[in-house]
Image (cartoon, rainbow, N blue to C red; front, side, top):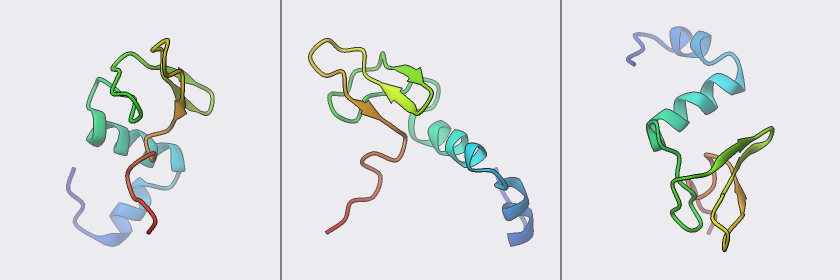
Length: 70
């Protein structure tokens, strides 16, 4: 998706859910993966995702591992 102006970009991303869906598509495409163990079989919860691997079972969102603090 290409935006021709800043107002057009800001208009498209009015809601946080739109930005999350956009970033999920960029990061994972159609197959989300657990950033902790790499499992490609997580399930969606009301607050993000949860790994279905029996050894991991960690919760995560698309933001986990995207930018790290020093």
